[in-house]
Length: 127
Image 1 (cartoon, rainbow, N blue to C red):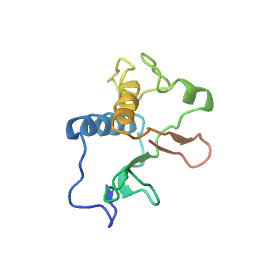
Image 2 (cartoon, one colour):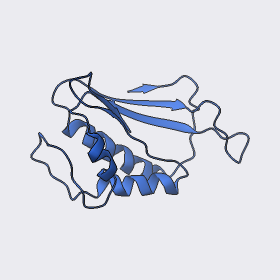
Image 3 (spheres, rainbow, N blue to C red):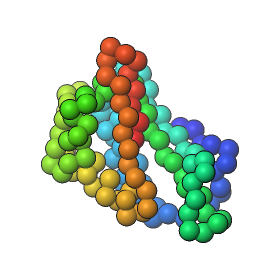
């Protein structure tokens, strides 16, 4: 993982919910990455303002070299009870993790985004 140099010592956030989201996103990245790496990067969002002039917006980015997500599957990815793609793990879920994560992030004033590159290009994704 990498923590940017401008991240403050103290971040005011719902710790339990943030942990739940990050664990879910990291678990998904690991589940679909057989070879390569999974990375968590924490940084301050440049130019992002919040109601308080002292507050900063923090970005948590998870990237991996996994199998990628097709354009068609991107539309379905955050829907409840939806599972897409092939899994290399015997661990299967209910298809609720990303839908719940997206809602939790929204309740904390953020947004969950996805970028993905499909093979044969260099494979990477970010949430």
